[in-house]
Each structure stands twice: as C-alpha cells, then as structure tokens.
Amino acid sequence: MGIFSRKPKQEQDVSNPANRQLNFNKEGLKLEWIDAVYLWEDEYQVMRIKQGWKPVDGHGFREEGKDRFAPVLWNINGTGVRATFDSYKGIVTEKVL
Image 1 (cartoon, rainbow, N blue to C red):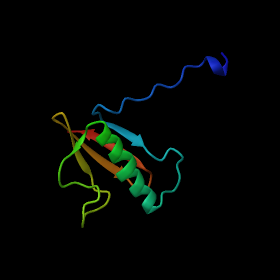
Image 2: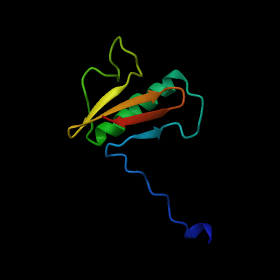
Image 3: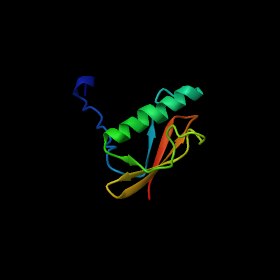
C-alpha cells in the first residue's frame, strides 16, 4: 500500500462528555508558566465553551486569589465533568461525575 492510499486518522469527538485525557502539548516541550496558562485558559477553555459546555461558578479560569490551574467543573446538559490540568505536561484529564 502506498502512502497516498491510507485513510486519514479519525478525529476524536471531544464534544461529548467522557473520561479521557487531552494532550495540548503534542510537541512535548517543557512548558513555561505562561505557556501553560495559555493552553489551559485559552485553548482548552475556549474549545469547551464553543462546544456549549458551561463552567460551574467558583472553579478555576482567571479567578482572583485562586490557583490558576484549579480543577474546573463543567455542566454539559445536566452531566458534570471535572477537568484537571497537568501544567508541566500540558494534559487535561476529564472525568465524568
């Protein structure tokens, strides 16, 4: 089989809640603090909000006086999902509650 006959990889549907890990640092680079903030607060948060996920008040994302990388609880049509972020590796772990 030639390289042109391969089917492209299927993209994982990340719009539905599931227990999974999402790697936002695919290059495996050592993340500086500001890079980790960008991945967590811009890449991940924006992706979820665009998909209709609602953050539950009082958890993470730019809250004053709180841990910048605190776990976030999402509400997706009545389903709860807790997201935690490994700020060293750039991996978000989502767990359905």
